[in-house]
Length: 366
Image 1 (cartoon, rainbow, N blue to C red):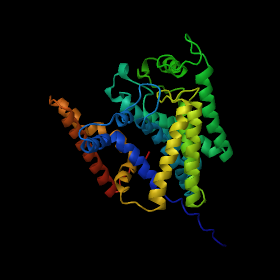
Image 2 (image 1 turned 90 degrees about the vertical axis):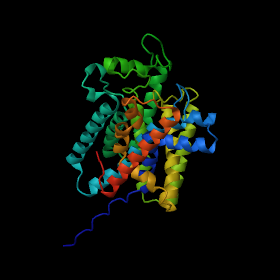
Image 3 (image 1 turned 45 degrees about the horizontal axis):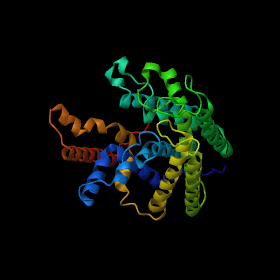
Image 4 (image 1 turned 60 degrees about the vertical axis):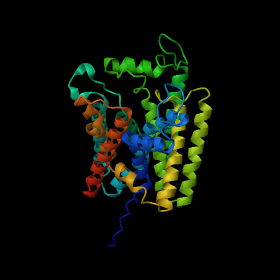
């Protein structure tokens, strides 16, 4: 009898971890480090155009700060083809894989309720059931998992297109009860009406929408899946780079054109916004892939990789080591400069914790 050699497990793409860490850097008080650097370079002021990109627009429009959430969902999708293939090749597919998927969805949902849903206050009057990025990832991950497991590539692409088109058409043409059709204002849009009808008093009270917008979340994760499939494919590195760039430019063009009729609004995750954000996500992944994996410039990337390898910890822990909050408990008054310094110190402490975990090979996986 001849034994058939086992297929090699897919190689880990370091640029995915680095890009995930780059994304997490900004919401783990890394923004304060960047602002401090800008203040030093620019003589104590932040240029107006840059200040715009460091905050969320009130409604219409899209800033660099808006990229954090969709990029997180996109990277989750990009990691999925590698994770699923590793589990299949190591004999952990079938029912065990479905249980893993359900377990991950449940844990992400609960963590989301802890992070922003006030779950740990044990006060039902403050509980928000669906109000967090981790829960949007859970929704998108569940749909993308089923699509990835049961449909060929053509079917996966068709589902992605359908989700974007279906959600976009719903938002554009289905009348909002009590208002009318094609309304995309903060208080009068179909996604907000569905949230109020489904979540009721468990809604978070913001202008962000979640239930119907899960169609858009799923599309964003699936677009990331397509990026991961490109990186997992047997194509040459240069061809993979061309595909990532080409899809990025195509998504940007499609998002901009569709945005003429369906505005780019992150709060309700319009389909034009999903495409626009995916375009930049493809291009960011292409840039990181070219520099880290193709050119081999990895020393600088270690700083972000430490964050990316434990992204759930980087997401959940910052509030626990927020020195500004600690100063408030002590009754100390913080000025703008002191607040910035405490944010910077909070980030340094977090990074050192993540570095310690990395050295001890402690990785929180869901």
